[in-house]
Image (tube, rainbow, N blue to C red; front, side, top):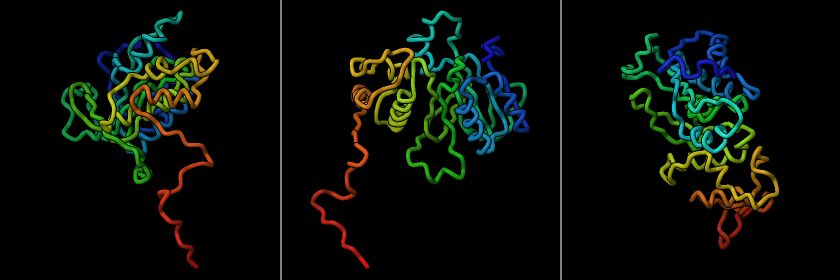
Length: 253
């Protein structure tokens, strides 16, 4: 990932790619060893009719900031402590970055927060589901987003990418479940580093970094610690679709 002049231009830049190649070029500096999650985010944005990309530089992301303090800042490397937040719109935004006075209905599709890490650039994302899949989504929530002081909303499902070092698939999956519950109003907000730091390391023999993931017991205990207790079901022993005292359905010809 190219980190040259990471915090420039300040406060951001407006891009209006007009082809798939131009869109890929716009996100080219965020290319990594694991580009598929970022590419999928772009596919979802384009499926929603995105025409304008506003890159917000020097964005202080609570989740990456927590990971930076807990892990990235302790590496023998020069890593920025800020992120880029990519905002997708279906409307046109002037090139002079007139985001301070966005039109009444800019057609906000959502955002993707990019952290300065080649192993996992997508710190978190919240995008509208593709139109052909919206009816199949059963866990969507609405998030209020401040874009240069303008309050916008996006309805979708929170997403994050593992970085293979501090947070593995299990950590980000737990965060996505918890973040969804938070946006629904069920639990308080927890920064993503908590999902690595609060995992009980005595429940498995592996080292914490680079992480090898979480065991079922660790994951269940983590949800309990974060005030979102989970029910653990074994495949093949799932509960029936009726209460214990209800009679079995009658067979029909």
